Length: 368
Ligand code: ATP
Ligand code: MG
Image 1 (tube, rainbow, N blue to C red):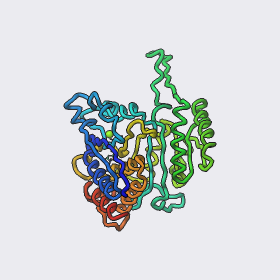
Image 2 (image 1 turned 45 degrees about the horizontal axis):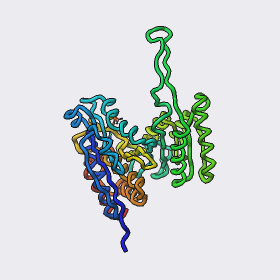
Image 3 (image 1 turned 180 degrees about the vertical axis):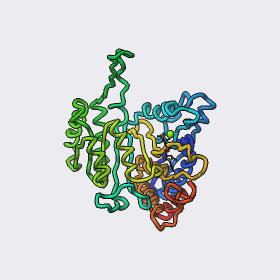
Image 4 (image 1 turned 135 degrees about the horizontal axis):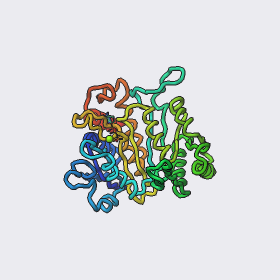
């Protein structure tokens, strides 16, 4: 008897700029993973969420986008933004941030792992480099509340008494659900969770977060928990990045850490991310950390690894961890010094986007 394969419907949105160049490589590698692991991936491509669509329709998305996308298992996204034609706040608020809100994608996830063949920007205090895999962390950012609330306003405007207030909002529901996700991730990784707050300065909301961390920790006796202040934590990211496993933080602190962590592990072209609705009531979204990179768009030289690795995260989330691991190993095999695989300019080579994409798909087929 043969094992029935589970079908997954995936909405593909390449977007703007290099999004349209790295997406075909992401799909190439996903197809290779599907054939190796017997996955049934059904892709449907959409031409919205980009400047050319906006130019024709005066909006980033069709009016019924929620019905169109709501039935998919995942959204595989390239990049959005073409600042020469349309301001970033219009393109971003008109697309990604709409998805995030409507589909309750309350977890933002960014793995940062030092890959072979990528020049690490950090060294140890004694000057020795970190080995590939030695830096390997997962930043979990709360994505819906916290410091990014729009509650507040200005008073006495235009006078000497001008006063500006913006509230931070934390709910037990909102804090607990992201902490639970982070603890679950720690449990399936190396069993260490670091939480970042600033309870000595922000004396109401941050101590509440700390309290919820301690309450949640009681349910995860197998996870070792560290609680840091955000200022000292950023210093530790630079001085001892190998110490961290899962790092969880509120919206603002998570935003900062999720830029810092990939910066500690090399080029922006390789970093992946996910916006998750862990209960799977709505589709989750997978996209590279980088943007549309207008400065190099149209030349076929963008690094496709961020897009490819995001595809691996998507397969993991859809329940195919072995396919995720195989894609990450294929990326590592292609990046390894002496692999002979082509390298894009950001990795110090002269190869094109498709050359590197093909090399990774081949490594995956060859059983990396
Ligand atoms: P965003 O608006 O999404 O925050 P941005 O527009 O400020 O991002 P990116 O589009 O990510 O920035 O580009 C930042 C820099 O990194 C640019 O110089 C760009 O060429 C480079 N870059 C981004 N992605 C890649 C990639 N995949 N390969 C090579 N270089 C890249
Ligand atoms: Mg941009």
